[in-house]
Image 1 (cartoon, one colour):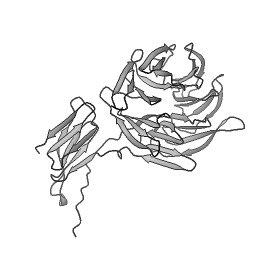
Image 2 (cartoon, helix red, strand yellow):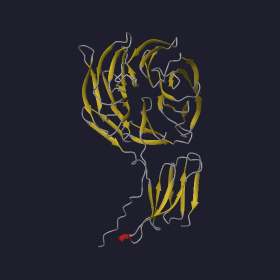
Image 3 (cartoon, rainbow, N blue to C red):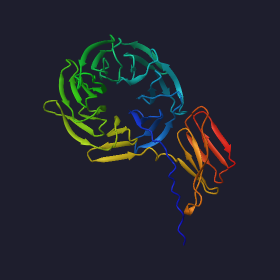
Image 4 (cartoon, rainbow, N blue to C red):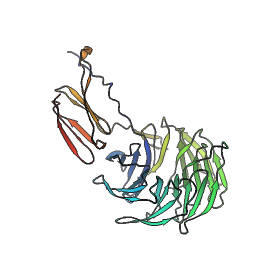
Length: 395
C-alpha cells in the first residue's frame, strides 16, 4: 500500500490576539474575554468551559474594559463611550458618550448592580444608574490630576477606591469628593509610580499593584501601609480577591501568579505560594466560581484551582476552523481576522510549489466571522457582522 502524501502548510501565518480583560457574571455563569483586536468572547462556565459565541470587533470598536450586570454586558474603550451588547444578535444595543469623549480605562458596577462607576483619561469618576432601557447619567465626581486607571467599589456602596499615577484615592459617592489620598513612593526620582490595579475588601483594606512590582495592603480609613510584598520584579498589572475575601491573586509582567492568604489570628496578609501557567505578561485575573481565570500576552485562557491542582488551558486557535480544503481542485482557504486567502497546494517532490491565488478583504475593514469554499474550488463565501458575500472563482 502506498503511503499518503502529506502537505505541510508553512505559509499560514495567523496572528493570535492577546487577552486584554476579563469579567464574570454570576447570574448567567458567563465569562467575557476581551482580546487585543477588541473582539469579545463569551464563554459558558456552568460545566466544562466552552466558547459559546464571539462579539466581533469593527473598525470603530475599542475595548479596554468589560463588565457584567445580571446578564447584561457592557464595554468601553478609547473612544470614550459605553456600549451595551445584545447577546442574541451580537450587535450593540446603544452607545453612551461619557463626558468629553476621552478614553475610558476602567468601569465597574456596585454590588447591588444599580450604579456604574467609570474612570477615564481626564481624571473624572462618572456615575451612571442602570435602568431597564439603558444607562442614565447620575453624577460626576470632582476632577483629579491624572488618569483614573483602575477602580473598585466598597461592598457597602458608599465609597469608591481609584488608582492612578502617584496615588490612591478614596471617594465618597454621595458627595463626589475625595475623603482620603495615599501617596506612593518612587523607585526613581524621575519616574512616578503607577497604580495599575486595585481592590478593596469589606473591612476597608485596600490592595494595590503598581509599576514598582509591589503588591501593597493599606488601611483605607487611615491610609497607613499594613504590609508590602515585592515578589515580582516587574509591574503588577492585575489582581483579584476571591468571594470570601481570604485569598488574593496578583500577577503582571512577570507571569508568575502569586497567592496571598489572610491569617486568622492577626488578620494580616501573608504570601502563600506561586504558580506559573503563562509564558508572557498576565494582564487579567478574575474569579469564576471556584476557578481562577487568567489571560495575557501569550493569548491562552487558563482556568486553575487548588486543591486539588487543576489546570485547564485553552489556546486561541482551537475554537473554530481557519483552514478549509477544496480537495477536488486542490486548493486551501485560509481565514484571517479581516481577510481570506486561497492557495493552490504543492505536489510531492516539490514539482509544483504552493501559490497564493487570491486575497479577499472586506471594503470597510470589517472582521470576518466565518468563511468557506466549495469542494471543487469554484465558490467562496465569507460573512462579516453586516453582510454575507458569495464569489464565483475562476482560478
